[in-house]
Amino acid sequence: MPALTYLGHSAFLLEDAAQTVAIDPFLTGNPTASTTADAIAPDTILLTHAHNDHVGDTVAIAKRTGAKVIATFELGTWLEGQGVAGATPANHGGTVAFPGGTVKLTPAWHTSSYEHEGSFVAPGIPAGLVVRFGGKTVYFAGDTCLFGDMALIGEEGLDVAVVPIGDHFTMGLEDAARAIGLLKPKIAIPCHFNTFAPIRQDPAEFKRLVEEHTAATGVILAPGQRHEF
Image (cartoon, rainbow, N blue to C red; front, side):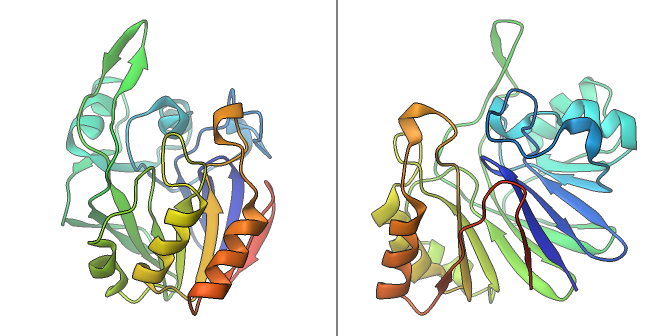
């Protein structure tokens, strides 16, 4: 049975009995992190975009574990240049297989660059991730605003949608709940909130809005908490 563990901010582990997938593993420097980069050993790492609070510890983890890393083209190419042997550049609309599942990259409305030694590198575009794993379909929206084509993503048949609610840099509570209405998942999980002062939000209000206006069930995970499908 697959399970999803929230590691804090936008970092997650998706696991079954055989495989572990890390999504946006920002742990070092993350004040809400429930674990450390050295404590996880994913077989695959999936990245939504190049911002430091999403790429996080990817390079160190991938070099230590040999994990396959799937990301948008510019970010994947930059990771190759950092010595990540398993880097796999991809792009919107493409589906990439990994051990135990697949990921389809979808549009997201945001920016994407990595700050490295005082310069912005790995410029490109952000993505959402439709992950099929363990017989379930999980959508990680990444950092994004609300947009109408989320209705098309909803046609993928989502068991779970993980969406940002922090406002300021992404959707806030009301737009995130509207996104769930378009995505039509069974379960809605918030992320990207309460890590830093500008993104302070009440996830209970997101859950209330979701359950009042959509057919989804809101599930709030504390860092370190696990949700079994």
